[in-house]
Length: 363
Image 1 (tube, rainbow, N blue to C red):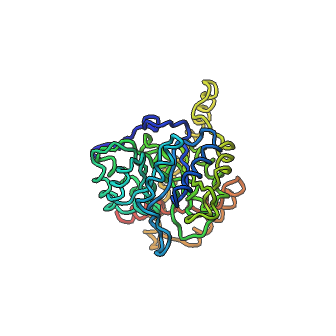
Image 2: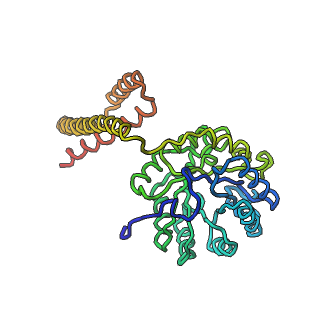
Image 3: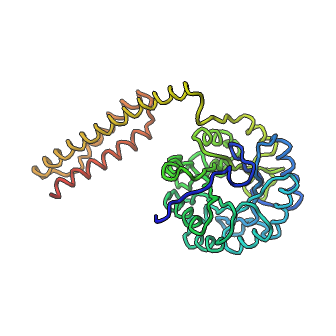
C-alpha cells in the first residue's frame, strides 16, 4: 500500500467510549414505539455500560421474501430513540443512497455489513459517497473467511479520508455444521490485529453464535483477546422480533451479561508485568527452538527427496504419512493437545516437507 492504513482510537471518536465500547439495540427497527421502549430499557438495565445504539433499517437477507427492513422511514425512529437517552446511533448501509439518507437524518455512525464487504465494487461506491464526510465507519468482516477482502474494504474507506475506522468481527460462513451460526475463526481477527494494530476491533457475538445462549461466552472470549468492544443485538421482546429472533436478548439479560463480563486490563503493576515478560521470554525461547527444529526437519526432507529421486520413489508415501499422524496423535493428545490442532499442524508440516522435496527434484 502506498498509504498505510491508520485509524483514530475509539477515544477520539468524540463519544463516551469507556472500555469496552458496547453497542446494543435491535436487529431491525420495526416501529417507533419498539425502538423507544427497547432503548429506554437498555439504558435502564445497563448502568451506563452501553455507549451506542444500533438498529437496521435496510436488511440484506440471504433469501428473497424475508423481512428486509422498513427502509428510510425508520431512520428518524432510530435517531430519536438515541436522542432521548443521549446516545449516538449507528445503522448498516449498503449503497450510496443509504449513505445520503443516513447523513440527512444525522445518523452518527455507519457500518458496512458482511454481505456488502464481499463486493469491492459495492464498497468502492460507498467510499466515493463518503468523500469529504467526517463520520465513523465500522466494517464487518465478509461472510467468507477472506482477510484480504476485509482489509481491502477498510483500505477503500480509508482512502477517501475516513480515519474513524473500526473492524467488526461477526464470524464467517461455513459449510460444516458447527455450534455457531458463523464460526468465529479467531485467527482471522487476530491476524488483522497483528497487521494493523491501530484498527479497533469490535466483536459481534450475536451473529457469531446465532443463539442468545452463546452470547455471554463469545463476548467474554472477545474481551479476553483484547478486542475493544461488543455489538449485542437487544430487543424489548426478542421472541417476537421480525428478524434474527433467536440471537437477540432482552435489555434485562443484556444488563446481566455486561455485569458478569470480566474486563481484563492490558497492563497491571510493574511487578506483574515483569512476571508476564518472563513467561513470554520462555515462550519466545520455545518458539525459537521450534523454528530451528523445523529448519532441521526440512533439511532432512530435502535429503529424503534426493533419495526418492535417485530410487524413483513417489514423493507421497501414504503408509509413512499414516504412521506420522498416528504417532503425533498418540503423543499430542496425551499432552493435552486437541486432535484438530495436531492434524492441522502436521498437515502444514507435511505440505512444507513435500515442497522441499520437490525443490530438490527440480534441480
